[in-house]
Image (cartoon, rainbow, N blue to C red; front, side, top):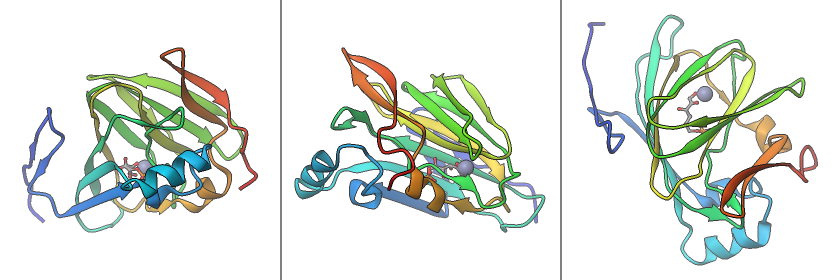
Length: 189
Ligand code: F6R
Ligand code: ZN
């Protein structure tokens, strides 16, 4: 392999060139928002695009790094802000860095042992996600929330554990403010 350069659009989150684009709609996240009625209504009304992931794939080998941008649309399902699915890494001892590029968001992170952290992210905020911490981002602003990430190419993704139990806390709007509440459905999916 040779060194290479990509164009990272700091305003719009594009990577150019880009060889792996994933779009997630609400129907891809059934069961992840607490308000199931609002989920089904929004799916019936057009199944909104919640976020797009632009990744530049290199061989998924130990030693390589993957670079990626995520663009989360503004909006809520019920009171709960649009967010990523969230995952542990399949190789749980792999860390990750996220850097906020545009908009206002939150990192939610937790361990299998029950530790939980929530950190506000704005343009220029660098968050470090240590090994063994599941991670999710949510958009709490009025515009797109865009962040850049870099992580080991052999990390892989374990979505199943989060699909089964969710995160310990949910991020909802209360009196116009992002508010963390205990997840009423934690562990009971
Ligand atoms: C990679 C990573 C991010 C997310 C992306 C979408 O390990 O953490 O690139 O993959 O922000 O979130 P998920 O994968 O949870 O749908
Ligand atoms: Zn990750």
